[in-house]
Length: 159
Image 1 (spheres, rainbow, N blue to C red):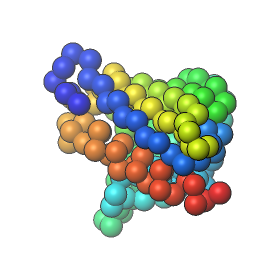
Image 2 (image 1 turned 135 degrees about the vertical axis):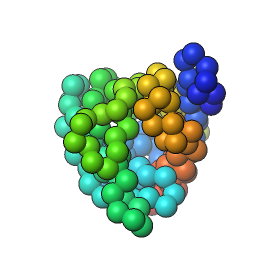
Image 3 (image 1 turned 60 degrees about the vertical axis):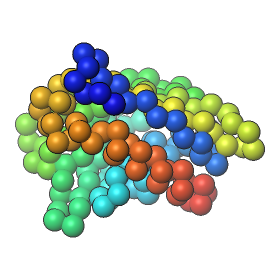
Image 4 (image 1 turned 30 degrees about the vertical axis):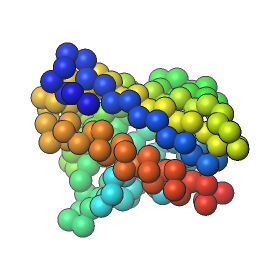
């Protein structure tokens, strides 16, 4: 990803050995989200999901030193077993002043051979993150790679 570009985008694909319905639920069910939605070295400490268009989607993460922040998002589109679109905001541990940026995260799920799912993640509109939280911006792609690796490894076994 080139965050100095005018419109920086992260685009990743993964094959998950679970049906699209299971992968879709992994993005929306708090007990499943806790298994994977944090980069290596962090864990999900709290999840709130209001599963409806315009509903909130909040994730708290912690590391060895305590709370590190997380995400405060809005669900913009829900197409069961196929697509989820979020207004995605990274927030620091205090959360008091609200989101520091707004970006767009689109998750697309397609059938893959053998009952698997091709997951495509597109995270765009990251310009405000670059100015608000440059250290976080530098690690967006790596963080998603680590989280998707966890999703691919843990969601099939959690069935």
